[in-house]
Length: 467
Image (cartoon, rainbow, N blue to C red; front, side, top):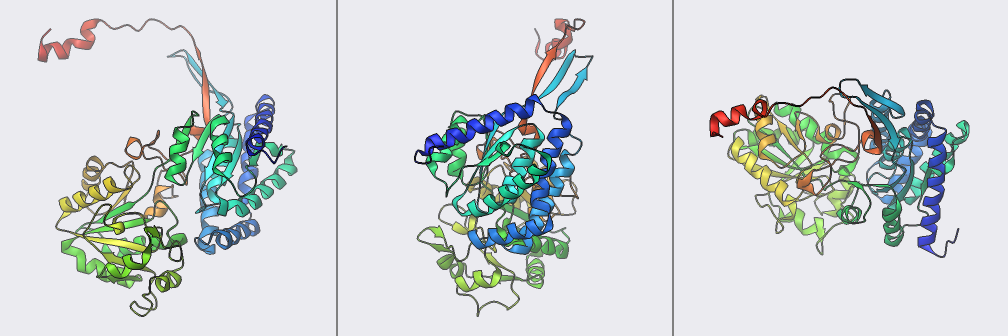
């Protein structure tokens, strides 16, 4: 391999992946695909390795915290393995005599995956497991800060492969600290691209000429209405907002509280460690530096973030997150966007309709298509919100971070990548999951004619509009 030529280096890696995938498919079986996926899953879930990956991720990226990354690596992977356990991804997967169509599962080929530094272990593991389950090879391009963690994960995966005689070339990475040039070439020559992370990478994926599954930006707003169980809502928002120091795209960035319960909910936030800041300039003056989020505050433990914002002496010692009151939305109001920190923006709404309006405006500013939340005991309001907001998910009475990407208590597929539909500039509006890593060949047989009379189709129309 010519390491002096970055383009040739990427091309050689993909060529090896393509050859390995062809062998994997040619000699494949459902058992072989399942075992490869299980090997990759156990590589990250084995407790000692999980801990090492979590510690390495925090040490090298400076983002998140070790206990939560251990939980994330375990639960996201376990949930994914539950989701795919009985999925048929090899051979004939459906045979319908009514339509005369038989579907045969086929791999896509070589998957190119671009993954962020916020989840340098869990996100690539998720992509790798899905790829192998469907008979693919995969080449990962980690973010520069995520390279050490993924290198360790790759070593663990290859060690598991050795137990079963699985080809290492099925799972590879773009070596080194990463470069736009190398990643761009991967985007161009893979058979499918899966991109999670910066919107710049997402745009590059969609313009690369290669089929792409890429996801939009998050900026979650959650409504607390006058019927909500305020204590339960506060507990869930605290748990979600603080998990892994708010590295998740599904972390709440704003809470919109109906006026009738505003003071009572503020008290519940205080009970859970949410310190209410009424002068937003105390936060905005330090959370952004020269127009960019302050790296000393991003995804940090509460005490470090609070110190970076100069608020140590102004909030209680047990503060877990900051709840900052504001009214503004848009480019001139940075608190209305994603903050990647333990900072929650708080809006006061006159009533539920006003809360929907505020939430709509927040999502149109940033995060359209991703997800919103609602804490309520009124049955028709989730549907009202779903029709009013440009969003792919309405999470009801749940801790948003845990619910959006799949939970053992809801039916969403376990994933770390959430499609945002056309609202977010994406090709999908679902969680990225195993079915996106597979295609099918259809055998089409002739069946008895099923041709309606013209009147069968247009009778109702003619009755209303005339011929």
